[in-house]
Image (cartoon, rainbow, N blue to C red):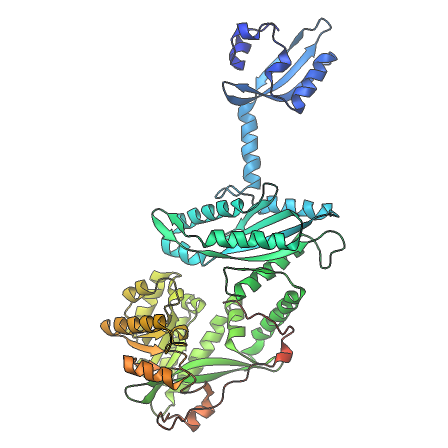
Length: 548
């Protein structure tokens, strides 16, 4: 081969090294090199043949066009198109990959899943894992989006380490990931991968010298080839995996669940329940119930927490644990919350003993511009003393728009209303919020009260909370008191108030007026518990509870 100096410079080799060398040997092995060798062998001209070669340790791409003559010579043009090719590859990568984590994006995942389903292999199995990071939004809001992005990137890396090279890991958006397992020998293989991912993500993440903890919940949908029951297209498989993810969260998070057909039936029931919920307020299907707050020192009822019940003509009595999450997800909680505020304050204004009324607020209500006007109008209309209104919020609620929410709490306080921190100790950053706002009351979650007589850890936590509250001038309420032995332990430790079935089950307004006083010595308490809607309404006896 005879070459000019320019060709030698482009190839990264000296002219002396190129003289007499076979032209094809310059290029890297592959289909393009084989095609070039064939064209030269048969003396066939070629145009725009793109081929790679190594120049000074770097892969470069040339596009060749040439005429081949019978005497074995070749005359043509070689253009270095590396920059163009790299730009195209970058664009292709960006179109198919998530820029934050570097793994596949939703588009590539959807295309790959469609191809796997279309092949319909007769041997082997495939599975789709759908997962998200538990409590990711709290971490993102607390430590900032930069830290949240780092957490997503590190989590993606850990997930990828749990699968094989032929499997596909994708970020579908936010903190949602999907894993496509394409060569499984049995269903247990998919469960083994899911457990590995759960275990990996339970390990703390160290980001900028901060130790962050999260976990994952995983839904598994199986595809077993043609003829498999319930097998549909990509959207069907994703929906099944999503339902299984919801079931995993209901099991307590940091676990996995497999799709079962009854989950679809429960999902249809949930959709119908939500549809009926939309008309329930207009149809007057809600009633308020009240559970007493009992002051241990003064041995009397000092207030009542407002609870809501849905008396549906179709579903029977639906408890808050079933319809409140639906109301939150659909946005109906704002209208329902306003109804509760107006009616609870109106009812409390007529109580002869002037007890306080406690009203729970939801995160969506706190973001509603109508919340403050609704409260002020109810106070004005009933002429109730605002100090008799106690608003209960959870610390998790403060995680969202914390500065705005704390400012809102100050507005409530300026009107004379009291503020209680509910479910204390179960949220993400309890002590920080005690520092942010001077609450009037801390409510100790029932999970710490349930075994208070036997468990040293529960006793230590409750004592610490009471000492902290006392130091900060706050009252304390123990929730979920059901036994006299619990009451005695709490009394001896100096708890301020208690609430629970030992004092009273939630009662409606009529029952409240029939027997308000609680005689602790005679152990007289109110009405029997509310009846949940009957088991015949549940389609599967093993139906999971709604996820929080």
